[in-house]
Image (cartoon, rainbow, N blue to C red; front, side, top):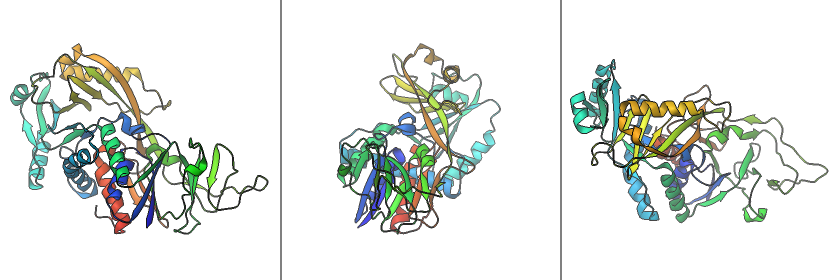
Length: 403
């Protein structure tokens, strides 16, 4: 039985775990230093911009298309398996076009999408006023409506995938930090270095040997993962435990040498606001995601909306700039004045993983190893989670990738 270890349990790691749990003959272990759906997943808005994106060919478009199609079956599948309700907005995405927008490009894209079996509608301001009376159309020239794009609650989705994967036999361990990996061991005996575990007794965590595939899906945490070119171990202590069969003594500890970082991923902070209105915006029977000037208005039910997000490169990785969040709200109010009456329920922020000096995401096999990378999704982790999971499944099961 092949043993797959997945590091990271955000939306991408959970999607991989669930997808692999559908393959017979696999033993799957998922490790994360936090509970599921933390980090970037916990702060995402879940806007699935596939059809409305300007990607029309190649790997990036195929992944978006696959994910949009897969979500239509994945959501009811997970709800049936787990009994959880996953908020999933099927009313599409409406993108507002300011004055000066090149509508010829949108008309061209609409024709391409039609040839691909998808639909995009170009609305003039008269149509926009009828369908969305809550919007200020004075500085708009048109709007693009994508009825087949979606929005999903990222946390509810991730927790459902964890439950479904667990019911299919996947083992999850949280509160576990992975430090590194020894490349010199054989593919059938790859030990993992585990540090800072909150497991009461280390023997509660099974020895992670005979790892056939290691999947790194830890987002920003992927940058902290180190490879060693020599066998390593660390001194035994309460908070620093080496799980492996190498001899270790207090007098002669063995330490790893010639380590290297696998990927370089930088944090990009985004902020969002959760608001409450006394009634639904516009037509209560038409509640799409509305996006304008890179600001999303996301209906989440009961007159509540999420508004975001910023793109910030923080020096303090935990705190965003309040002025930028205020600017986001000001932009949203400019094209949707009814938001001025909103009550703020909460604000939140999250760090998104953006690869340094290479495109996002990183989905590949590390040359000369049994390590698979599924990380660095930047702003598209929720959108591309199903396609990423399928790509990893193909690598493991068929040793090839179709995207």
